[in-house]
Image (cartoon, rainbow, N blue to C red; front, side, top):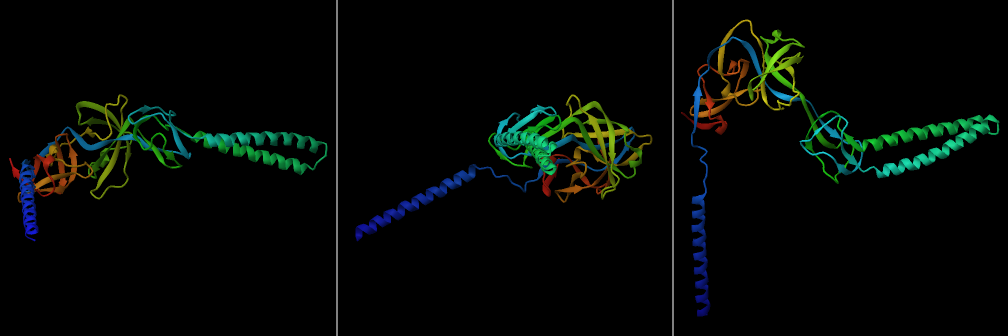
Length: 349
């Protein structure tokens, strides 16, 4: 009994030592792990909205989009036997992208052709017998109708066989591949996404006060942020007939891109000559967060960065007009936004 008590005491002691050691290791590991203090203020630079003269041109910002982008589906059912392209490949209109197993359809076609061959021979015999009045004329006519029905079935089957070869509907770049070799596909299942950037669309939002200065087929000057000193020729191809809730009209500009210098997703701007100067409350363009369709900035209030939406007007590349949503006394973050989230604590540099 005494021996059992001694062993139990030793066991309890060992367990206690292990627990103490584990707790010590946990504290050491925790001390080495860096935990970001989300309450620590982030250093930023700010400014306040100021009056700015927009003299030389009316400029509106937008994002370049591909002229055409489409998902290519399959009209056939079966297993992918050949995959002839990969993501990033440039393909031309009509180029074969993949092939679906159509062996069963080909066998059906062979069987149908044998049936058609026999039906044609019957037609020749029935026509000859009908001419000599050996059989009723109606019997020969029924045979001709049966032959015509078989020919229609053959065309339908050939269409199914042709649909097993997946081709590009237009020239462009394969931007997504949804299937791989051996995948089983069916009608309507997307196989590829193809994007055409030979031309691009730039959609900008023009305030009601300026929309009458634009018209369809009007030539405009287009720039991309990445090519600050280069101009691209643009043509207005569509103007929305209805404004959004902020009384802005969507204006679509088509920009030729034969050398593929521009890419979809880049920021760009459209500008036209402005005969009259405009002095308006503005903020630096560097303060802008998000898209030009829903422009936002960080406004500093009580030591916190508050993500704030506002209505933008015209722009000249360096400044954006503030139509509403921001007060002239608001402190706007112009540097350090990349580290911010809504309601982050901030410290002004």
